[in-house]
Length: 225
Image (cartoon, rainbow, N blue to C red; front, side):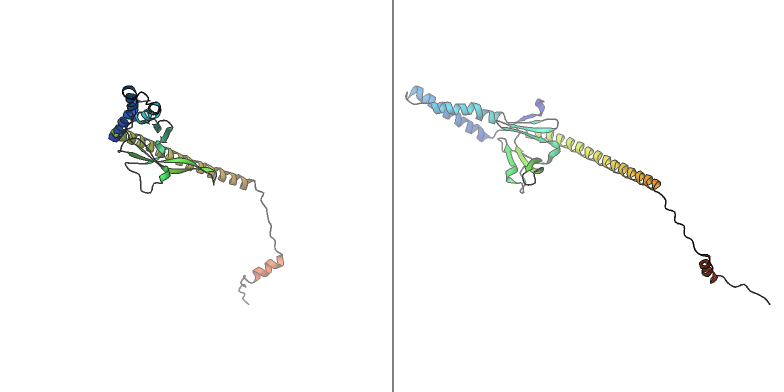
């Protein structure tokens, strides 16, 4: 993983304040138990400490966004490992669109400065029993906001160019395929016409009919007495 393409989540000042209060809550029972009341138990402090070490600190300080070659990787402890392919991105903004569906809006980060990425994700349609693409939105909060926007903008532009070039190539290949298909069909038709037996129909007329047909059209010759 390129360190220059890895961005940790920014932290709001209220997050720092909440962490400070939380750690004070962990320390107080230990202090009270040692200096004041010997019978004060600190079992819940151990529980808070376990939550702090196993969940809270990794969640806050190990949420990051990595710009890989073909996709943006979003990691948030403990379950989120999201891949957003650049080819599937259709918008990069700083707020959610008003018409965005709530169930497809998610936030991964701890700063008020967000980058909203709209992309196409796949879901299974149970009624139609097939996979279809829907619009989804993910908000992230990189600490180095400007550098991230520059980097993802470059990745997005490059992916868009590649996608457009691929689409153009596919269109050209499709047109060539259609031409070849039409040419093969034409050659088959020509062969079929060449091999088709020729029906010869001979039409004959009776001499009397011929004479009667032509008699009216022939002019009488001028005779002189």
